[in-house]
Length: 298
Image (cartoon, rainbow, N blue to C red; front, side, top):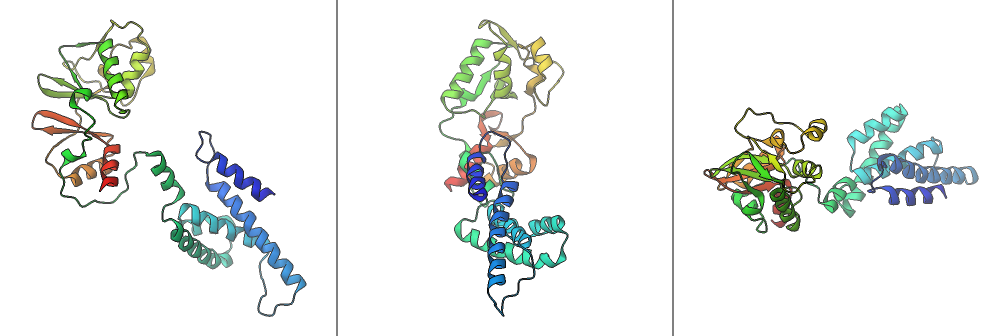
């Protein structure tokens, strides 16, 4: 009964928006199954004489082996998991059974699906996660740009220091209509890329501005004061000042550069976006999700 209830509760809670993991519940489920097997073998040994079968461990050892098997099948871990289980038990006699159990469980789970539960969730939710391996492609970086994202939708033409809050709201509405929730606005002045403003920062400022005719300040002529995040105290005092949240030096890449270079920049530099240029002219913006769409479409 405890096994059935634990499996049902784990299935219901994993992936939901509550602090419930999969590591410990999987260990509990596996240990319950292993203990059931250990008790069954212990009962058989007590009631039947089997010369070739002489169990030397208590049902608790089978519980640990069951926990190891389920964890290896769910997380695809082998060596690190054997070390963790050895540290939990402190028994050298169980190291070899642990290793054999982990190998068999890994082989059996790979025959069903080679991805772990974490990789399956990442793919199901389309999270922007890039694996740490190189790709071979002769395509150009311009091919990463999605066709449904026009340049005008991600560009904000600067005519001075001030921008109407109404214009910013229209830009956000256009991006949301296109389904772009991870792309910001490229600030262009005099035909040149002057900076990049994230969508999250724009929304946070506009939520505190009730007057549609209000003017937001984006001063790129003064000294730089870029913030690593949203400073809420400063935001409440002056919500119309977007200058501290502008990235004045966004990383750029020529549109004819290879896709492999763009992938390496995202992977090794931890970029969230990359501006694609044609000389001084902005062509578009590439995000991690665009890289993932390209890799899936190959």
